[in-house]
Length: 58
Ligand SMILES: [Zn+2]
Image 1 (cartoon, rainbow, N blue to C red):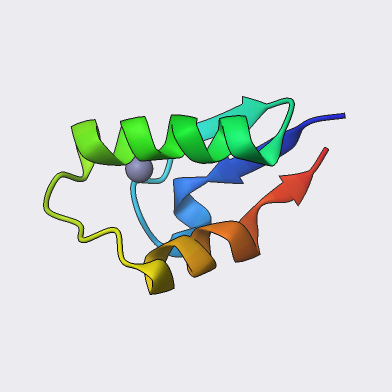
Image 2: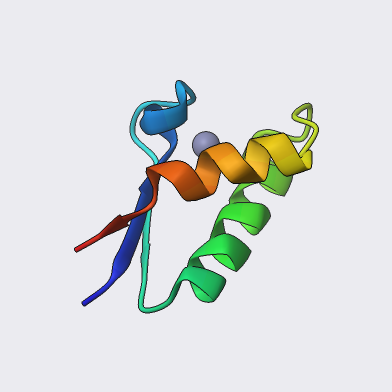
């Protein structure tokens, strides 16, 4: 069981994906990725809601 997130699901860079055992770890990984690769993106609550909405159980 793992939680997965792919940037393409929110229309961003196509190839980046993250897999973590829990949603909290996944959110932390996505936050680090966003800070590095999407520094221009404002990580508003709406953005996080969108991120959470495309997280999948695998
Ligand atoms: Zn990305």
